[in-house]
Length: 139
Image: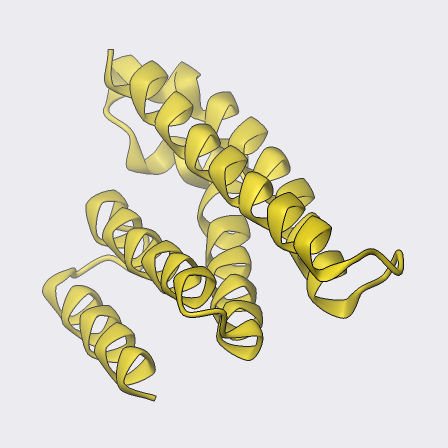
């Protein structure tokens, strides 16, 4: 409950600090906070916490990164051609979010250890997709 309140306060602060609903920095900070909640759920073995956090993160990641034209509007003129990288990251994120959801729901009847390892690996792939996009767009 405490982490949900903290994430909500961060999200509120970020949204109030931005005049634009699609301010890139504010949205990235929000995604980062939500991804930290996923990580915290893994660390504390809180399946329900992971599920709630990954659902919020996935929704916001798709809204922010999933549309090339909308994402391009947030980039400087000389970086607009890099918006396709955000869409690719959104696809990688969506795929790995599904792996985490399947593990939580035990969709394939795997042991708890295998499900934890697969979902944690998927989490690291999500992180990698974020870093990859940042590195490409920032250069």
